[in-house]
Length: 105
Image (cartoon, rainbow, N blue to C red; front, side):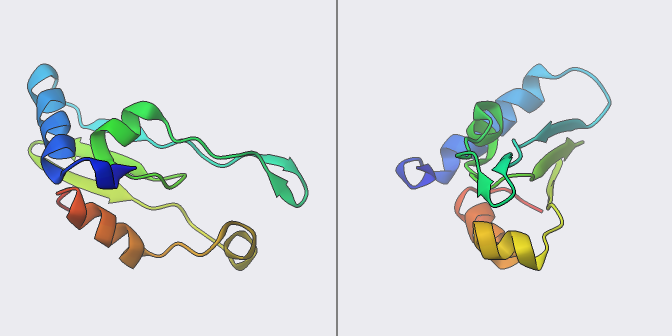
């Protein structure tokens, strides 16, 4: 879905948040996480709308940190079983989304 929006959209959303936030603490926004239905079945994943609005990233468990003009993402730990059931997701995949959406790291 983020392909429908340009990088300016997401970068502009983060900049508006930065302007509205008058505190001195970092802004930390977490993506939703995947939830299990049963031992081998997960619920359908839906990204947190605020997280998507700021990043365009539709992967579970990622955290956005914005601090004094710097932005970075914290990636969740993954294991082989999770990759088998949910599909592999690498830092390189996220870097492509990050680059496309102008999220500096």
